[in-house]
Image (cartoon, rainbow, N blue to C red; front, side):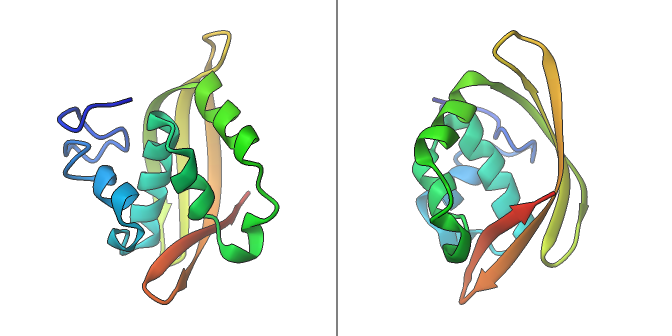
Length: 126
């Protein structure tokens, strides 16, 4: 687990406590799709599986497997997040990580988000 005084895994330059930890503690603090994307990346890094699960859009959440999410988070060492492009409801990013054999991998995705009330949710990615 990352300490609150360490740099936030999302790469914002702020401490974890000043940045994504606030969103993990209160989903409503993610006021944009990009803020939720950053918080979700950080949740993989700190293994906050409940946050990841709960921020899937309600229409897609039932298709998610918490155990599989936890396994993916734990078997990789999350290194860096690069936001390539963000619009109102999409975020294109690269997540750099070391896999279980310590090989560098880059997961590139264009994620779609949906706002429901004052909360943002992750819908899907391609």
